[in-house]
Length: 204
Length: 80
Image 1 (cartoon, rainbow over the protein chains, first blue to last red):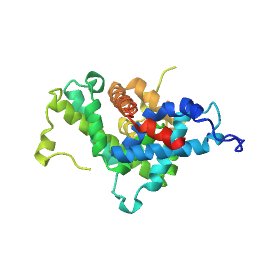
Image 2: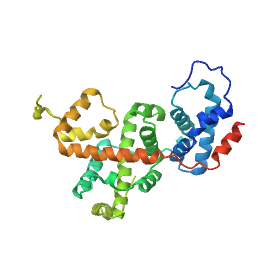
Image 3: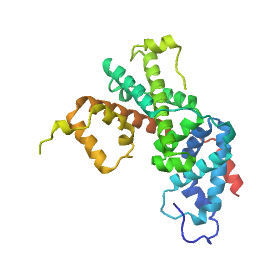
Image 4: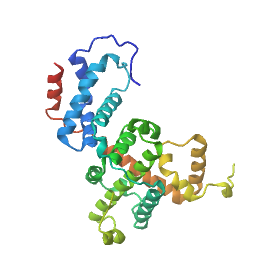
């Protein structure tokens, strides 16, 4: 936690806050967009994050990781605002996801593409894949792959069992990999997956 | 020191812990057992390398800062 002992300091000069916190605006904005998938919502979330950070600045410990602290605020505000009544509940099985992930690796290996992720720019495909993920899956990717949260910390943040974090993470990564493989197919780096073609595409 | 190959974890058990290993979620003893397996199994080493590259790609792409346009001015105006 990034809180200092003294909570009685006055709010900082805007210039100080601008120099030390607002410098992370591009990062927080990106983070908010990943969570909301809507630029207007992301801007509102980002603004609320910085306003709350400004109010809480006297309790922020100098020298702590400000970027992480801002991500934490952003995520908490997002989670509080989110309509939990619309939550999607899926039956997920980490073992099944692992088998599917393994099959994708075997496919890449068989086609001499073990270094697929290093060989081509997969940024656009990954962005599309993230956009297509359900919020529940995207959240775990954001927490674990951006914030470097442990599974336990992610479970606490999302208020779900650690097993749910694990299964959602595995599924999210499998779906992202699937997006990347399809992109690589489109570019001619991989031969199309006949089984998938006959089934009519991917599914969450 | 030589390793008794009969005591190595089987591939399917190692692969089942792939993501937890790459995410640093395993305790030292389990990490050591997996490392020992990887030292002797080229197939699993290649698979772990493949997935590690995937995770690096994800981390690199989704952590890129984005353009913030007028948002900065909007926040500063709200603070003042």
